Length: 231
Image (cartoon, rainbow, N blue to C red; front, side, top):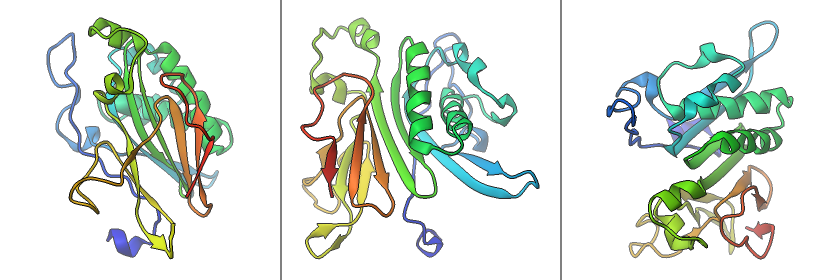
């Protein structure tokens, strides 16, 4: 079904639910309402679907209820996870900016990370023609867990490094990427060929353009030498 759909962008997610520190229980049950990825459809005045967005999150926002008031349409929240709230806030910003996917995500991420007192924020978000990837860890969380600044990439990698690898080629030029939260034994059994994405930057993969755009948002490690990493 995936192959027949013809879409160039796919998001898959295996959920490891967070434990609520107040109740000691899993935040959000093991049911469809709490399963990633989360979807946001946009309709015109006649109720027809004109576009849509999809997103998944790996990490934790323990104080997510503090910024839940930012939701423009709270009724859209069907489950009990912090991830769904954060993702719908990001999509709210995209819609508020008239479908400016990258601009809306940049503003939305800045807002929720500013309010997040302790977080691990690894996102995969997509519009019909663009995939956006983001990974960041709150400094205070690292200090609370015994890490000392300046933080190394090794310190950050413990909380969800995101990796990319070329997926298919035309001649000697890669035409697509796979992005994952760990190096997989594909296409090479020794897991070689994977390169880490910079922390604190929004990584944007455009459907029909030959580049991967990196937009620094939070200074966690020195940025890459180039703003644009050519395919």
